[in-house]
Length: 116
Image (cartoon, rainbow, N blue to C red; front, top):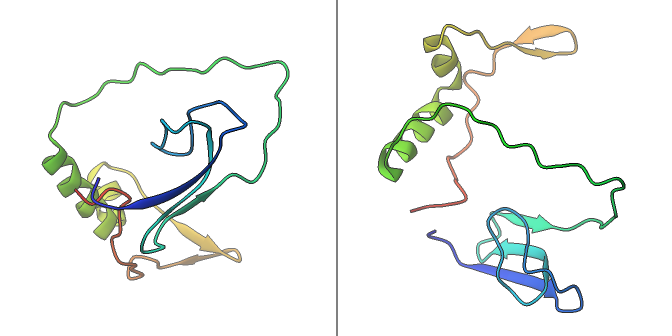
């Protein structure tokens, strides 16, 4: 949503899946990058897991919302994660080399995978 991507896939591996939400190509998607190089997904290995473990699905309660409201919530949480946790009655500590540090002022630009 809102970005253009380039994908590399392996037709010799007839699995129409890939990382994140990428799927539907005629082979396993091994690498995906957006055209501005903000996001890059890359397969670093393939191995058989034995025995196979079932995928666990959780039945957590949810709140019905709109994409617009969800994006507004995510921006608010991103811009002030300490305030978000505090509003939920939780505390958040950042510890580096055994000392508590204040990361509440650190800020990186909000750059979600989906822009729409």
